[in-house]
Length: 280
Ligand SMILES: Nc1ncnc2c1ncn2[C@@H]1O[C@H](COP(=O)(O)OP(=O)(O)O)[C@@H](O)[C@H]1O
Ligand SMILES: [Mg+2]
Image (cartoon, rainbow, N blue to C red; front, top):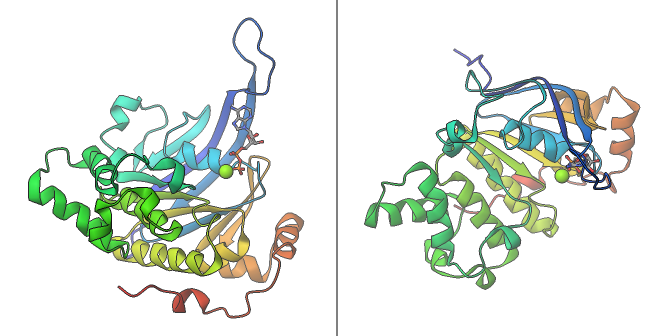
C-alpha cells in the first residue's frame, strides 16, 4: 500500500528573524518577515525541488524544515511529530535522521582534517558507540555509496577534485542513514558534466535509501533533470507547486514563466542525466 503520511510537512509556516540590515541601536533588533505562510509535504523516496530567484527564501525555508530556525507561525512536522517548538536538545535525537548537504564543501570541510575524520565526526551524531573496524567500515561504506574510492578518505580535502569533495559532502550527510536530506545549491559551483554526475548520484541515493530529498536550486534546468515535484518561491511565498513535468509544460504563473524563459538554452538531450550516471 502506498505510504500516505508525509515524512516532512510544513503547515502555514511563517518565519521572522531579527533584521540584520537594521541599524544597531538600543533594545532588540526589529524583526523582518522572511517566510509568509508556506505549506508543503515531502514523502520518502521523493525529490522536491525548491526554486526561485536569489533572496526568495529558499534557504530560510530549508533551514526551517530542519528546525535550524524556529518558526514564528504555523508548524513543522517530521515523521508525524510536531517539532515546531522543540528545543535543540530535544532535536538532537532526530538530527541523525535529518541532514544537510552544503553548497560549498570546500568551506564546510575542515581543511586540516582528513576526510575520514570529518565523516567520523558526522557519524558521531548517530552512532557514537561505533568503534574500531566497525566504524572504519561504516565510513568506507558511505564513501562507496557516493562512488568514492574508500582509499580517498585518508586524504585531505585539498587533495581531492571539486566533484570528489562534493561527494564527500554527500557522504557526510548520508553516513548516519538519514530519512530527510536537504541539498542547498549543491551543484552550483560545478562544471556541467560534474553536475550531471552529482545529480545522478543524488537521484540514485534518494531511490535506494528511500530518502526524502529537498533540493534547492535557482537553476530550473537542474530542477527539471532531478525532481519529482517543484515548489516555486517568490518573496517568501510558494507561488506555484506541482509535479515537475506539469510545471514545465504548463506553468500557472507569470513568475514561473519568466523563470523558465531565463533558462539559457533548452536541454538539447533530455536523457543527459541518466547517461551521466557514474559507474558504481
Ligand atoms: N537575519 C536576516 N535579516 C534580514 N534579512 C534576512 C535575514 N535572513 C535572511 N534575510 C533575507 O531573507 C530573504 C530570503 O533569504 P534566503 O532564504 O537566503 O533566500 P534564497 O536562499 O532564496 O536566496 C532575503 O531577502 C534575505 O536578504
Ligand atoms: Mg540560498
